[in-house]
Image 1 (cartoon, one colour):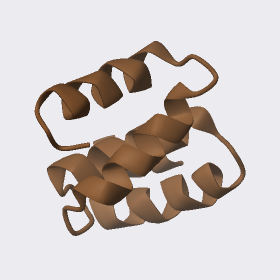
Image 2 (cartoon, one colour):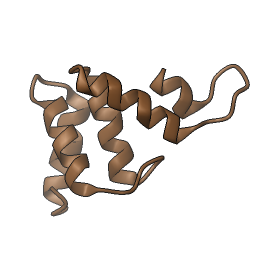
Image 3 (cartoon, one colour):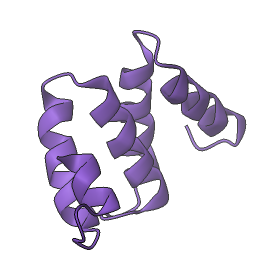
Image 4 (cartoon, one colour):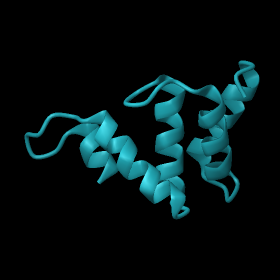
Length: 83
């Protein structure tokens, strides 16, 4: 549901705040894709207040059992001094 709200679906407009709500629910249950997506939202400030610390924590958690997108984002944040 988070991705449907983030991207818009069936003619509905994107609702990034609603997407964040659904990603939080899934992330709390260990869904690594939701952790990655929510981390990216915090990193960019999409639908949530920008928060580098939360972004890094979520992306790192998503990357622990290897998830290549999240590993790349963690490496980028470390490289740029944001993690």
